[in-house]
Length: 365
Image (cartoon, rainbow, N blue to C red; front, top):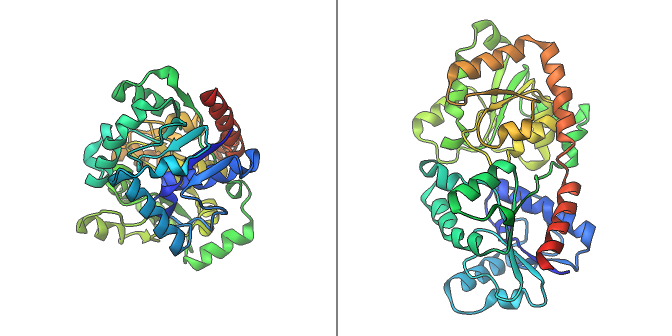
């Protein structure tokens, strides 16, 4: 069986989808062999993961994005050429004209463009709307959570039998962070006090202003002892939000190499997102043994599975109460840390890749 994976998101600025493709392709190749798992464009060995830039060099990036443009905006059968001899072509939402001969598959990461359009940029909404027909045409689909599968069935009318739930994975480095790495990252980012950590981006869906409100409403004694650290790019925040973000410990974009030790250094992890298809930051915090507060909506209760405190993400009082409860209770923090690690062990890229290869075999047969 030969699979071609659309890897164009690895060439652009991207977050969750890029994270997924980077680790997924690498583990698929380890299990099936590089000859069985090809990419469009051809990338060979992947460079270091960064969400801010391409994982490939300038020439391969330029050629890859050019090939996608030719495929999408000209009649040239670019993807038919790229997928010669393949049994499966696994597309992303950037592809408009998939190849005709291989079986078409894709991964559904979330349905937020449909369910919360006001929380996405116009470009993201256009890309997702254009991909809807591709998802409906696909022979088989992967959903990264049961919540995402249900939403796709409900919103797009896709037959539930065509969608297989395969949870995403967590990089192994989050499960075993060395104390020296934690100390080094704390010193480099000048994190002298214990802190509540939030990851993501400053965009409406991540709900950062509500988290700041909740933290600022904590008793003064707790705010004197703990910081709120925001390791988040600014995204498309307005000026008022930017000012509020800078009023706490704003760390900005965190390079991938620092992400695991920074996460493990936190006393509490807060993730009050309004919607997630999977929620990589939450799963990674659980793997690092950090007790978490997260939302009681979308896929987050599914991923936490009782290993985090759940709150209404739109309620400042609920969020403040859960954070205060954890900060005041070392015993509860230890209990959730143990539960989180145990739950996170179910989300490995090795398991994800093995289930994905079974999915491809079934789709090709």
